[in-house]
Length: 295
Image (cartoon, rainbow, N blue to C red):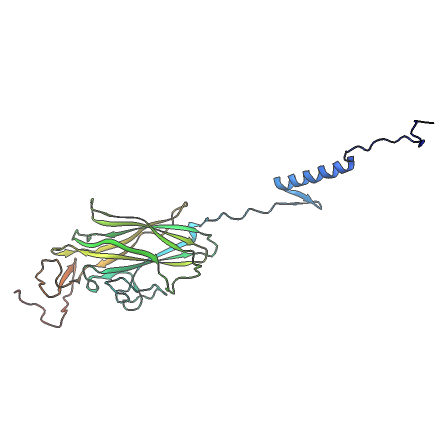
């Protein structure tokens, strides 16, 4: 009887559908996730902000970088090879430190001269790269043909106690170097330092060759070396100011014996006075007479 099923009860096939309650739960979960991704959400009646994105890698703050351009003490390294010298704790000394000016009597034509730049980064300044522009004069301020003509090398001064908190990712690249004769003779170079991180102090080392014209004549004026400008790579200018190291007048520079010069040296060294305005001193090199005779 009934529907002919023999069970006395009507049965219907089960539908493959989700209950209204299940749909409501899923819909609520999706809406909640979307709201969290888009902005603040309400939790226990209180608005909460999503976590801030981490700072971008390479966002070095130019305001947190300071630069100190200085020369190695002339008696702290080998003038033929350019090996030696250190910034360390910035002790001012010709014999065991650094100097803010150079004197011609401490150098010979063809010597290699060592310079440093201390790159100091504040603890919260981020990380990135810096580029520094230098000019090494190829003649004196009065136009005498004595100056710097070649950048021999640029590197991190490894083993220097002035380096702080380095992790080994630091590197140095010479981006450009050119000797310019238009106008005033000068050597211009741009050097990039990578791996500059918050809290670092990196000692950049530069070795430059000193040149003298074979017949320089009466040499007067200063030979200037200058840190002209600096910037964060991909960022803004570092406020370094223009930092200059002079090779001062009123002293002497040695022409080695047998060199290509026309000052009567023959088989002996000759000392060429670099003179300037104002009083200068006469220095007897070998303990002999102040004035001698030509031969």
